[in-house]
Image (cartoon, rainbow, N blue to C red):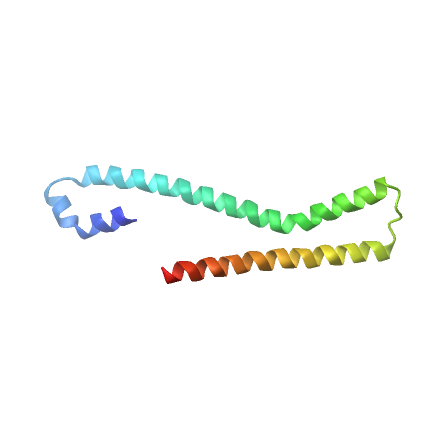
Amino acid sequence: MKSTVECLSNMKVIKLQSWDELFLRKIEELRSVERRWVSYFMYAWACNIFAIWAAPVIVSIITFFNMDFLGETLDPVKLFTALTVFGVLKTAAVSRKHLQFVADGSIHGLN
């Protein structure tokens, strides 16, 4: 981003010296690197969000499968209690993640 701003602020010199092709290639190289890092960050962020929202479902499936495998009876009292506990844990995990984003924004805002 710095390179783009610098090139735009010195556009007159770049045009007079016929350096526009050189700077264009350099800016495109920098943008491709930046685009790669942004896409990596967004994929990692999406996987993180998916993991937070999918974890309670996966834990529920594993828990109920194990209860059935061990011979426990799956009556409504146990099922609804377990689903409520998993929902509370999911809410706590999501709230913790949101608090982390707020803290990161506050720290970056101070810099």
